[in-house]
Every structure is written in C-alpha cells, then in structure tokens.
Image (cartoon, rainbow, N blue to C red; front, side):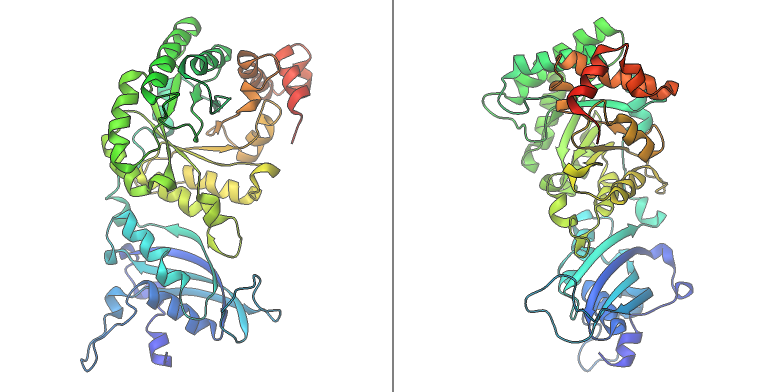
Amino acid sequence: MTPDDIAGFHARRTDLDLDDYIELDFTFECAGDPREAAAHLCSEQSTAQWRRVGIDEDFRPRFAAKVLDLESQPRPSGFSIPVECAVRGPVHACRVTIAHPHGNFGPRLPNLISAVLGEGVFFAPGIPLIRLQDIRFPDSFLSAFQGPQFGIVGLRDRLQAYDRPIFFGVIKPNIGLPAEPFAELGYQSWLGGLDIAKDDEMLADIPWCPLADRAAALGEARRRAEEETGVPKIYLANITDEVDRLVELHDLAVAKGANALLVNAMPVGLSGVRMLRRHAKVPLIAHFPFIAAFSRLAGYGVHSRVLTRLQRLAGFDVVIMPGFGPRMMTPEQEVLDCVRACLEPMGRIAPCLPVPGGSDSAATLEGVYRKVGCTDFGFVPGRGVFGHPMGPAAGAASIRQAWEAIAAGIPVAEHAVAHPELRAALDAFGRK
C-alpha cells in the first residue's frame, strides 16, 4: 500500500457518523509496519479493492472499515505462537479499534460473522495472529433484532424466584437412561429445591430416549413436583438438531411438557437460533459446545464475550458459559467479561441470564456469587446434585441450604452442622 492508500483506512471518530458503524476491538501480531497492517485488516474485511481500473472513483468513504485507534509495541522475540508460513520482518504486538460500516452486510448474523470473523480478518496480509476481543453495536443496528423474549425478568416471573440465583441441575447420568428413570431423577431434584432440571447438551432425540417420551415423562414429573412443592418448576429439553428440525422439535417438546428449550448455539448456528426465536413460545437457553475451539488461545480467534453478545442478540434468554475453576480452563476475568456481556445495557436488547458452570456444587456456590457480585446468575451443578451421596433430592437441598447461609451472612460450613445434606455435599465435593 502507498501512504495515501494506508491513510484512506484511518479515520478520527469525529469524521464518522458512528451510528452507521459497529466497533471492533482486535489484538494482533504483525510483521512489518503496524499502521499498514491495520489498514490491510480494514481493507480485507470490507472493500479490498476500492476502485475499478482506469476509473476515477473511491468506495472507501462509504464502504471501508476504518482504524480509529491503534497502539503497537515491538516484540523482539518474534511471534508469541509459532506460525508456519508466517511473513518475515520486525514483529509488533498491536491493539486496534476498527469502525466497520454495518450497511455492508445489514442486520444478518451470517453476513456479520463473515465480515468480522471471516477470511478478511484471518488472512489479512502480515497478520498471522489475531483475536477479536470485543464488538459493540449502535442502536441503529440493534433495532432490527428482537433479542431475548423473556430475559431475566420473564424467567424470574415464570419461576416466582426473586432476589436469589436461579438453580439449575444437569440430570445425570446424562446419556444412557430411558425416559422414565431419567424423569424420576428430575422429579427428585425438583422436590429438593431445584428450579430447573435440564437435559445435558449431549442428550439428543435418540431411539433409546426419544424427545417425545422424555418431554412427556419430565413434563408429568414437573407437574407433580409443582403440586407437591407449591412453586413453579421448569423442565429444560435439549432440541439441538439439524436446523430444519428446530421448529418441529420446539412444538413437539412444548406440547409434551417441556417449558424451556436448550440449543447448542454454535453447532446449530446463530441464524438458526434467530429463526427459532421468532417462533418460540418458551425461554431459549444456550449451551457452549464449539466455543472453546475459537476462544481458548489468548492470542488467536475470538474472545468468548463476543460470542456471548451474539447469542444475546440472536434471542437467547439464558446463556450457559464456561465458569470458574480449573476444569473449565477459562481465566476468571474472561468469565466475568461474559457475565457482563449478558447483563450490561445493549440498546433495546433485554439482558439475558448468565450461567457460568463447570463442576459446581453447594461447596462452590458462595465463591461464584462473590465473583459475579449480584444475584442475577444461574447456578448449574451436575454431579453436585445428581452425584450427591444422599441422592438428587438431598443434592438440590444442599444447594438451597448453602444459599440460605449465604443470604443470612452465616458461614456455609457453620450452617452445615445442622443440615446433613449440606454437610454431605461439603464432604463429598470440597471447595475449589
């Protein structure tokens, strides 16, 4: 690029009507001039060739992505991750904010993702390592999306559960049980105090436990649990499948007794989720398969909060995400970034409930609550309820007992002395 070419992809905020742009925060490592690398990054994701040969025209003012802010520092040691076929030259580590005109793709999630996480980003000249760290949308873009139908307020109203976390539980064994014994486990957990008993994200519509049979059995168990406890409950059925079956499985599961639906967001695709949101009669809950494949390396791919924002935009009422603790291999700050992406203002798009999960139990509830810093989150044990030594009813009770202690300002271990379910959970699962 010539100096004039490079300058055409840089702008000041005051030069732009920012309502016409989404903002993208990238980190990248480049070989060569960082200012030119950033210009290539803008060019390749928007108008890679901005005029026809022999014609006096320039499409950049309207269609080009523009660098708003750029910081760089040399990396004398070279690229932080070895990349075969990487370009040679002095290496710099950079942070850049780019304004991308959303009129290039319109309010269409597949086209948005193709622009900001596609070929133009990951094959930009001179940039072998790049990560999309964050994305922000103007109200003009958000106005075309429905977002969550129920959100946190609607979910709390359905459960009549206020001023506390929402208590989920992943029915275990997650695969192998036919519908009736699977439903019995859910029933016991509801009696013990769970709000939501859920299918595992791996449990599909399979011959030995068909969705129709499972939803009917869990629907009936849920109704019995509601009668016996006097409080509403939710059965969360997994309808992850081919996109052309989502509406059919929604109707089937809801008719049989499911009153919320789980979808593995990235395997199905966010456009499929957005289509389902237009049809949905019950809350939609996202799970996170495939996300770690994009987000785990700090220097490459996409920060998981970007995918959290996109799931909220697509219409999920709840987003289950990798949580705290060593098993999930996610930095604590990244978990908190994703929690905030569910809760913070986002134009007309309602907040969705964040559910940071992974190897949780009554022993970890207080730690999760303190880190999140408010009660607007879901808590989702699996074995912490269904692997409790006294059974799932006791496992669920241990969660509620732990919360009683936290809400009253009593040490959880002290409260456990008079509560055998909680004491057994602390003994069995320890603290992380």
